[in-house]
Image (tube, rainbow, N blue to C red):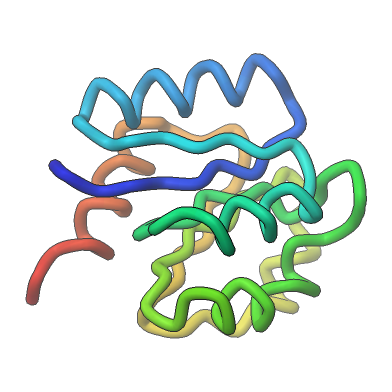
Length: 119
């Protein structure tokens, strides 16, 4: 797969797992530990998929979804969280998937491929 993913995650172990898994599937991977650097990365790089923890060091990625989409209107998004209360707050579009931590990385990769497939 010739696609690019930006991972927003502040847990180093999860970053390593997700980054390696996406790379093994042929993705070019960018990593950011916070929203500020994620916005910078999105403004500088072509990104097809955003894989984002809902809560990171400098805030909630949910609060910045519109900013991400302004930088890239065709962006596909996978949100993840261990906080179950976010499930009810999230109104998912057809370009967004939500998964609960701990997640099955194979299901994450399958979701990514489904979001990015040319239907």
